[in-house]
Length: 464
Image 1 (cartoon, helix red, strand yellow):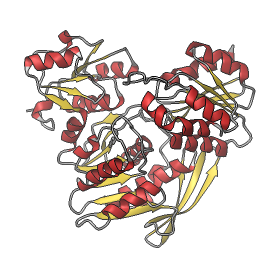
Image 2 (tube, one colour):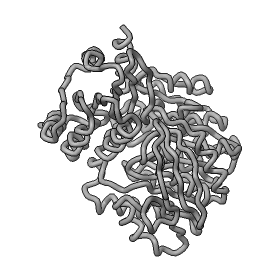
Image 3 (cartoon, helix red, strand yellow):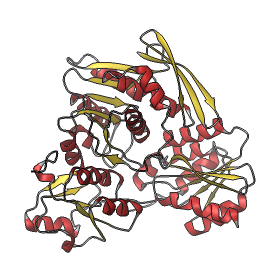
């Protein structure tokens, strides 16, 4: 067995290897010396990056992609049972491993920090990865988005710390055994897998149950769902609970957040002493994510002042209020926000960063089930923009639900007083938005689907 690689991971085959979570695990395994192969639906920069590391990446799914000597097949919850490679794995009796189990195996023997919450996981995990790297601690990390600096979502490090984004969407975060767990917030989402808030709380409780004895839960003192979860788990033996936030009761209390254009400055009170540091991204929610990251690092024994300085080196994650460019005096920014809370936070951050600018939003709803449950709230969030363009729903892994369309969002937005236009032809959006935009405006492409592709095209139209 290759050192540092579980036996089952010697020759893994990933179905959907280009996905954010899957590609990260594949990168780490490749860097550790495994013979990695996989397939994805289309060519991408991620596929090229994996090939550069030595992985074999097939485009398109076919039974012949799976090598006879594969040690396992790695899947996510998005892979359907009739996938030809999955069917072939059954014929060859190749073990099938869920993405979360593969990631859990990579954490074995390391000091793990698992970052959970309905929103903010990618940013907070990234902040930790950057800060720990800046402090020469050489962490391993697996993130749901590419860091703006290193430009990658995962890396194998020689240090003893492993930082991982912990996904609650399919309950897979219950597979991890972290020394430190962060819970940023707890809200109802992923409606295909959770029927109620009670189910959400039960899932997060199961996640906190996996924290190793003597480990630490870092959790928000401000967000109602997190406060409820704290009350449910605080008295468990062997668990240290550290709360953070602006609430008077917080163990790590945020004294002040000062916006400074597209950055901010945070002053907090920790162990009776004030500490001030810079956050190089805009918005209160990102400042609070940085405080959570700092508290988690302190729980591992890293000096707070060192972490505070290192966190200032974080410059963002792709698709998290990422500046795509500027043309004709118009800045185009990309946002991954797809839940009403995330949408509101990013829109408010943009308002705070450039209060005099007009804000134009191109929003693509993500998933029929999410739109069915939260479409009204999405529409209300869009009322924070000056002008909104709403695309058709991006289905991702779901089949259509009769009667569920973007009209649910558009109607709610108009009722809230928003200036909103439906555009069903995505190809028409760049020209339409360029025609609306004026010098000094901010254009925000928003959503978890392929709306991100529109930013460069809008810039091209603005430049012509």
